[in-house]
Image (cartoon, rainbow, N blue to C red; front, side):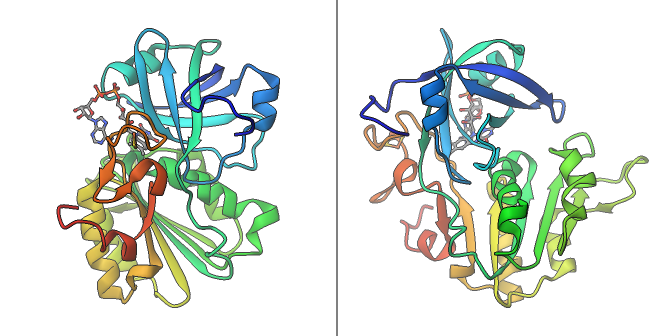
Length: 281
Ligand SMILES: Cc1cc2nc3c(=O)[nH]c(=O)nc-3n(C[C@H](O)[C@H](O)[C@H](O)COP(=O)(O)OP(=O)(O)OC[C@H]3O[C@@H](n4cnc5c(N)ncnc54)[C@H](O)[C@@H]3O)c2cc1C
Ligand code: FES
């Protein structure tokens, strides 16, 4: 963000559209009210922003839209508690606050010339969506090799971004999408089973490939085991850490892991970096 503006001060923004994704996830498309702020906004795939509902509070979210869309920002938000409930009750035209962008980003520069494997679970697809859309963008696609996307949710209803997942990404050149749900359902003809087991079955080769993961900690743990079995090295695997945050700018210490602050040094880390963090992590 440009200028010497206080980074803790939110910009006013307007909700332009609300796209229901599942029964408890909605994508909020917003624009900044101040045209200069909107023109100056730059984010990278994987970065975060703090959203506020006036009179309720604020919380950190991944920016789920690609930075190549300069005309709006999107956030895909699961209803959890007070703040997210208030957001879910809002309608298009509603006003919120937004400050950011914060944190590092997926190192898409390092990924150039490589194949990419995305593994996501549930709402964990939100930050991955920004990077996947970025990589598949016509102007960027030639910089990356084969793209594999493996995504799972508890049920068909819980699959986020269905239009991309079932009818969009797989139509892109050299792109394969594997989706799965935990338990069989009459209307689902796709794969049934947990993400790690499906990954083991698909068995992607680690050769010249980076894996990018985001999802619930239990899924990440088992996915890592499978990737290790398949021969992926720690520096080929990237994930985001979602520690609870308050300031977002490295001042309050709420998000520290040892000497690292997730809001500044993260949220994106390679497994090689995560391996050096204190053992409780
Ligand atoms: C770096 C980062 C990126 C995030 N990106 C997204 C995103 O793209 N989409 C999205 O829906 N959510 C995301 N979250 C989580 C989001 O910030 C929380 O869901 C939000 O703070 C909940 O606020 P609330 O007031 O509605 O719920 P609260 O009342 O604060 O919490 C409700 C319940 O959710 C639990 N909870 C809240 N936050 C977290 C968390 N970070 N990890 C584990 N449990 C939590 C609480 O323990 C409680 O049980 C992200 C969090 C971080 C730190
Ligand atoms: S959230 Fe305050 S230091 Fe990271």
